[in-house]
Structures are given as C-alpha cells and as structure tokens.
Length: 123
Image 1 (spheres, rainbow, N blue to C red):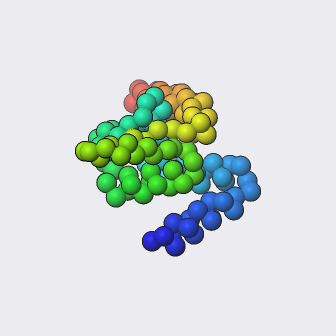
Image 2: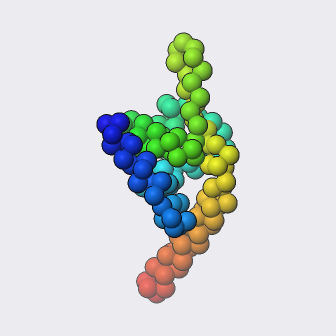
C-alpha cells in the first residue's frame, strides 16, 4: 500500500502543465466536495463523513490522505481521549476559494440554463 501511495505521489509530482497539475490534485468525485465543506471551518472526521453524503469511510480516508500529501489540507491530531482529529485547509488550499466560487457561479448559471432549455422544449 505504501508503495502505491508513493507511486501516486510521484505521478502527481511529474506534472509540467499547470492545468494538469491542478486537475490531478483536486480531481475525482469527492475531493472538490471535501474541500468545499472545509472552506469555512475545520471539521472532525465524523463531521466530514456526515457532510459528504454517499462517501464511504475508506474513500474519505483515502481522499483526505491524498489531499494532505498534496498539502491542500492539514490534519491536526489533538492527542487527547477520546481521539480528536480535525482537518482544515492549508494556506495553499485556501487559494482554491476563488476557483470554488467560480464553480459555484458556473453551476448556478448552468442549472438555470438547463431549466430554460427544458421550458423552451416543452412549450
């Protein structure tokens, strides 16, 4: 498993195209949603699992590890009982905020456009 993670990290490091690097870092069904949920405040693992509906625990752990490895999020272990771990955006992760704002706006516009198209087709 460690060898697989090392190989994935090496593959991500070999990007020379900025778009390719960005897509490799935040691609997949879950990473963008995880980052969106962390945009306002740190969250504990259980909070994050509940906030990202449909994600399995295994997938959440994998995605969090990859984002941490890419220095987009940080994991803080409070070394107390019961165990308490929080995830938050790093300064590099917070730089994605305008990107997510633009995606949000594009999504709203796209939904509106689709609704207008359906209305026009049904008329």
